[in-house]
Length: 208
Image (cartoon, rainbow, N blue to C red; front, side, top):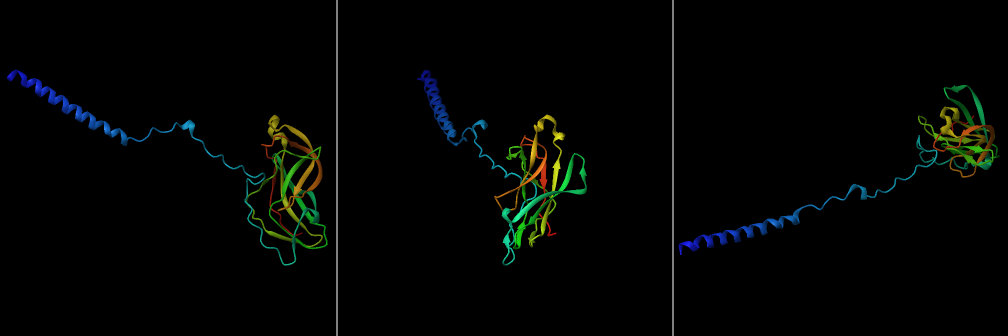
């Protein structure tokens, strides 16, 4: 009888070990799932910025005076005027002038849109960015009065071959909040590479 005792003990110990092993395996259900590989993550694309709005933001226009309508391209003329001492290293500052040619007062607020025109009279290159450091104000123009915005033009030669320099015939100007435009004949050169920003425009001020 004594010789059989080790066999029974060994069998009992083996059974206990198997039970413990089975209990230990249940912990797998609590393990966190394997992380998703980073390459499989899909990110929503960021919205593109509107052309010509990379600098100063434009707040909503205040309500115009009673009886005063918004200035539209049909009511305005546009011109570019040289300014004394407007030259700077690699660029030049000029005045962009919008004049009320209608027979009634009108109101304007904010930044005009400005782009170069190709010799085929189509827009070429990047549109003007908005200058920072100046707040937009509402400007009421009586017939014959003008609003003025600062216009900086950077020389295309500053960018070398990257510019893809092309002749331009002038500027296309969009009054604030207007999809109609005014063209200004002004021969020169611009960049066909629309990643290079040669133009910068400030808010309209005045009247004068």
